[in-house]
Amino acid sequence: MIFFLIPVFNEEKNIPNLYRELADFSLPEEAFFVFSDDGSTDQSKAIIEDLFKDNLFIILGDGINRGPGAAFNTGFEWILNESKSDSDCVVTLEADCTSDLSILPVMLMLNKMKYDLVLASVYAQGGGFEQTSFYRKFTSACANFLFRFLFNVQVLTLSSFYRVYSLSILQTIKKASPALIAETGFICMLEILVKCIKQGAEVIEVPMRLHSSKRQGQSKMKVFKTTLQYFRFLFKNRD
Image 1 (cartoon, rainbow, N blue to C red):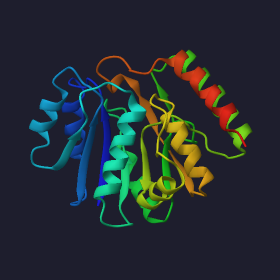
Image 2 (image 1 turned 30 degrees about the vertical axis):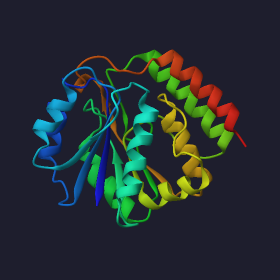
Image 3 (image 1 turned 120 degrees about the vertical axis):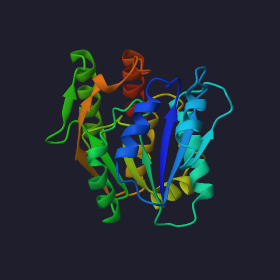
Image 4 (image 1 turned 180 degrees about the vertical axis):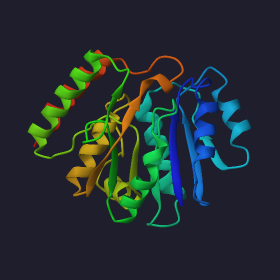
Protein backbone atom coordinates (compact mmCIF):
# COMPACT_ATOMS: atom_id res chain seq x y z
CA MET A 1 0.00 0.00 0.00
CA ILE A 2 1.12 3.53 -0.78
CA PHE A 3 -0.28 6.05 1.68
CA PHE A 4 -0.47 9.68 0.53
CA LEU A 5 -0.34 11.91 3.62
CA ILE A 6 -1.50 15.44 2.84
CA PRO A 7 -1.82 18.11 5.57
CA VAL A 8 -4.62 20.57 4.87
CA PHE A 9 -5.36 24.03 6.23
CA ASN A 10 -7.83 26.18 4.27
CA GLU A 11 -6.89 24.80 0.86
CA GLU A 12 -10.27 25.01 -0.89
CA LYS A 13 -8.70 26.84 -3.86
CA ASN A 14 -5.89 24.31 -4.25
CA ILE A 15 -7.57 20.95 -3.68
CA PRO A 16 -9.37 20.81 -7.07
CA ASN A 17 -6.04 21.39 -8.84
CA LEU A 18 -4.35 18.81 -6.63
CA TYR A 19 -7.07 16.30 -7.47
CA ARG A 20 -6.62 16.92 -11.21
CA GLU A 21 -2.85 16.48 -10.95
CA LEU A 22 -3.26 13.23 -9.02
CA ALA A 23 -5.91 12.02 -11.49
CA ASP A 24 -3.49 12.64 -14.37
CA PHE A 25 -0.79 10.67 -12.56
CA SER A 26 -0.77 6.89 -12.96
CA LEU A 27 -1.60 6.05 -9.37
CA PRO A 28 -0.95 2.54 -8.11
CA GLU A 29 -4.08 0.50 -7.45
CA GLU A 30 -3.29 0.32 -3.75
CA ALA A 31 -3.23 4.04 -2.97
CA PHE A 32 -4.82 5.46 0.17
CA PHE A 33 -5.18 9.22 0.69
CA VAL A 34 -4.85 10.45 4.26
CA PHE A 35 -5.87 14.11 4.59
CA SER A 36 -4.87 15.50 7.97
CA ASP A 37 -6.95 18.63 8.44
CA ASP A 38 -5.47 21.29 10.71
CA GLY A 39 -8.67 23.10 11.62
CA SER A 40 -9.75 24.38 8.21
CA THR A 41 -12.56 26.95 8.35
CA ASP A 42 -13.29 26.94 4.62
CA GLN A 43 -14.81 24.23 2.40
CA SER A 44 -11.66 22.08 2.18
CA LYS A 45 -13.20 18.99 3.79
CA ALA A 46 -16.39 19.12 1.72
CA ILE A 47 -14.37 19.47 -1.50
CA ILE A 48 -12.15 16.51 -0.56
CA GLU A 49 -15.19 14.36 0.21
CA ASP A 50 -16.73 15.21 -3.17
CA LEU A 51 -13.65 14.87 -5.38
CA PHE A 52 -12.06 11.81 -3.75
CA LYS A 53 -15.28 9.84 -3.23
CA ASP A 54 -14.16 7.17 -5.71
CA ASN A 55 -10.78 6.74 -3.98
CA LEU A 56 -9.70 5.21 -0.69
CA PHE A 57 -9.39 8.20 1.63
CA ILE A 58 -9.91 9.50 5.14
CA ILE A 59 -9.99 12.99 6.63
CA LEU A 60 -8.43 13.22 10.08
CA GLY A 61 -8.65 16.13 12.51
CA ASP A 62 -10.65 17.52 15.40
CA GLY A 63 -11.28 21.02 14.04
CA ILE A 64 -8.47 22.66 16.03
CA ASN A 65 -5.57 24.48 14.36
CA ARG A 66 -2.37 23.16 15.96
CA GLY A 67 0.12 23.55 13.12
CA PRO A 68 1.55 21.34 10.36
CA GLY A 69 3.68 19.31 12.76
CA ALA A 70 0.61 18.18 14.67
CA ALA A 71 -1.20 17.42 11.40
CA PHE A 72 1.70 15.28 10.17
CA ASN A 73 1.99 13.47 13.49
CA THR A 74 -1.73 12.65 13.48
CA GLY A 75 -1.45 11.29 9.94
CA PHE A 76 1.68 9.24 10.58
CA GLU A 77 0.19 7.72 13.74
CA TRP A 78 -2.97 6.72 11.88
CA ILE A 79 -0.96 5.12 9.07
CA LEU A 80 1.25 3.18 11.50
CA ASN A 81 -1.87 1.81 13.18
CA GLU A 82 -3.61 0.90 9.91
CA SER A 83 -0.73 -0.40 7.78
CA LYS A 84 -0.68 -4.15 7.24
CA SER A 85 2.76 -4.56 5.65
CA ASP A 86 6.31 -3.49 6.41
CA SER A 87 6.77 -2.89 2.67
CA ASP A 88 4.24 -0.03 2.68
CA CYS A 89 5.46 3.51 2.14
CA VAL A 90 4.21 7.02 2.87
CA VAL A 91 4.27 9.84 0.32
CA THR A 92 3.92 13.25 1.95
CA LEU A 93 2.67 16.02 -0.32
CA GLU A 94 1.86 19.72 -0.20
CA ALA A 95 -1.86 20.42 -0.57
CA ASP A 96 -1.07 23.59 -2.55
CA CYS A 97 0.14 21.78 -5.71
CA THR A 98 3.81 22.79 -5.34
CA SER A 99 4.90 19.13 -5.16
CA ASP A 100 6.03 18.12 -8.66
CA LEU A 101 4.36 14.77 -9.31
CA SER A 102 6.48 14.16 -12.42
CA ILE A 103 9.36 13.03 -10.17
CA LEU A 104 7.22 10.75 -7.99
CA PRO A 105 7.87 7.58 -10.07
CA VAL A 106 11.61 8.05 -9.50
CA MET A 107 11.06 8.64 -5.79
CA LEU A 108 8.96 5.49 -5.48
CA MET A 109 11.52 3.48 -7.42
CA LEU A 110 14.26 4.62 -5.04
CA ASN A 111 12.08 3.64 -2.10
CA LYS A 112 11.76 0.15 -3.57
CA MET A 113 15.57 0.11 -3.83
CA LYS A 114 15.56 0.25 -0.02
CA TYR A 115 16.11 3.96 0.53
CA ASP A 116 14.32 4.74 3.80
CA LEU A 117 13.74 8.39 2.99
CA VAL A 118 13.58 10.02 -0.44
CA LEU A 119 13.58 13.82 -0.47
CA ALA A 120 12.39 16.09 -3.28
CA SER A 121 15.11 18.73 -3.30
CA VAL A 122 15.34 22.15 -4.91
CA TYR A 123 19.03 22.16 -3.93
CA ALA A 124 20.05 18.92 -5.64
CA GLN A 125 21.70 19.36 -9.03
CA GLY A 126 18.94 20.02 -11.55
CA GLY A 127 16.52 21.42 -8.97
CA GLY A 128 15.67 25.04 -8.28
CA PHE A 129 13.10 27.71 -7.52
CA GLU A 130 10.59 29.51 -9.70
CA GLN A 131 9.13 32.82 -8.47
CA THR A 132 10.51 32.56 -4.93
CA SER A 133 11.82 35.60 -3.05
CA PHE A 134 15.56 36.14 -2.57
CA TYR A 135 14.99 36.47 1.20
CA ARG A 136 13.38 33.04 1.42
CA LYS A 137 16.11 31.47 -0.73
CA PHE A 138 18.85 33.10 1.39
CA THR A 139 17.48 32.08 4.80
CA SER A 140 16.83 28.56 3.54
CA ALA A 141 20.38 28.28 2.21
CA CYS A 142 21.84 29.46 5.54
CA ALA A 143 19.82 26.91 7.52
CA ASN A 144 20.87 24.15 5.14
CA PHE A 145 24.55 25.08 5.48
CA LEU A 146 24.36 25.00 9.28
CA PHE A 147 22.62 21.63 9.18
CA ARG A 148 25.36 20.06 7.06
CA PHE A 149 28.03 21.62 9.28
CA LEU A 150 26.51 20.58 12.62
CA PHE A 151 25.34 17.09 11.64
CA ASN A 152 28.11 16.24 9.16
CA VAL A 153 25.71 14.91 6.52
CA GLN A 154 25.27 15.86 2.90
CA VAL A 155 21.50 16.35 2.84
CA LEU A 156 20.80 19.53 0.91
CA THR A 157 17.16 20.17 1.75
CA LEU A 158 15.50 20.40 5.16
CA SER A 159 11.97 21.70 4.95
CA SER A 160 10.29 20.17 1.91
CA PHE A 161 7.01 18.41 2.71
CA TYR A 162 7.42 16.31 -0.44
CA ARG A 163 9.04 13.02 0.61
CA VAL A 164 8.71 9.25 0.48
CA TYR A 165 9.22 7.38 3.77
CA SER A 166 9.51 3.64 4.21
CA LEU A 167 7.11 2.39 6.84
CA SER A 168 10.00 0.61 8.55
CA ILE A 169 11.91 3.82 9.33
CA LEU A 170 8.76 5.38 10.80
CA GLN A 171 8.27 2.28 12.96
CA THR A 172 11.89 2.51 14.14
CA ILE A 173 11.51 6.18 15.09
CA LYS A 174 8.26 5.45 16.88
CA LYS A 175 9.97 2.82 19.04
CA ALA A 176 12.81 5.22 19.90
CA SER A 177 10.78 8.39 20.56
CA PRO A 178 7.74 9.28 22.65
CA ALA A 179 6.25 10.83 19.50
CA LEU A 180 7.18 10.73 15.84
CA ILE A 181 6.90 14.51 15.71
CA ALA A 182 6.84 16.76 18.78
CA GLU A 183 7.23 20.11 17.02
CA THR A 184 3.95 21.67 15.92
CA GLY A 185 5.24 24.19 13.37
CA PHE A 186 6.93 23.92 9.99
CA ILE A 187 10.15 22.87 11.70
CA CYS A 188 8.54 19.43 12.02
CA MET A 189 10.14 18.38 8.73
CA LEU A 190 13.60 19.05 10.13
CA GLU A 191 12.73 17.18 13.32
CA ILE A 192 11.72 13.96 11.58
CA LEU A 193 14.65 14.24 9.15
CA VAL A 194 17.09 14.40 12.08
CA LYS A 195 15.36 11.43 13.72
CA CYS A 196 15.64 9.43 10.50
CA ILE A 197 19.35 10.18 10.22
CA LYS A 198 20.00 9.32 13.87
CA GLN A 199 18.31 5.95 13.30
CA GLY A 200 20.66 5.20 10.42
CA ALA A 201 18.21 5.81 7.58
CA GLU A 202 19.41 5.57 3.99
CA VAL A 203 18.55 9.00 2.56
CA ILE A 204 18.66 10.18 -1.04
CA GLU A 205 17.54 13.37 -2.81
CA VAL A 206 15.78 13.83 -6.14
CA PRO A 207 16.03 17.23 -7.88
CA MET A 208 12.80 19.21 -8.16
CA ARG A 209 11.80 22.58 -9.59
CA LEU A 210 9.58 24.42 -7.11
CA HIS A 211 6.88 26.38 -8.96
CA SER A 212 5.36 28.71 -6.37
CA SER A 213 3.06 30.18 -9.03
CA LYS A 214 0.97 26.98 -8.94
CA ARG A 215 -0.17 27.83 -5.42
CA GLN A 216 -3.54 29.58 -5.06
CA GLY A 217 -3.30 32.00 -2.14
CA GLN A 218 -0.37 32.73 0.15
CA SER A 219 2.02 30.28 1.74
CA LYS A 220 1.08 29.51 5.35
CA MET A 221 4.74 29.57 6.46
CA LYS A 222 6.05 32.66 8.25
CA VAL A 223 9.61 32.77 6.93
CA PHE A 224 11.32 34.80 9.69
CA LYS A 225 9.66 32.93 12.56
CA THR A 226 10.35 29.55 10.97
CA THR A 227 13.98 30.45 10.26
CA LEU A 228 14.58 31.32 13.93
CA GLN A 229 12.99 28.03 14.94
CA TYR A 230 15.30 26.17 12.56
CA PHE A 231 18.44 27.75 14.01
CA ARG A 232 17.30 27.09 17.58
CA PHE A 233 16.47 23.47 16.77
CA LEU A 234 19.77 22.89 14.97
CA PHE A 235 21.91 24.08 17.87
CA LYS A 236 19.76 22.33 20.47
CA ASN A 237 19.95 18.96 18.73
CA ARG A 238 23.53 18.92 17.47
CA ASP A 239 25.61 16.00 18.71
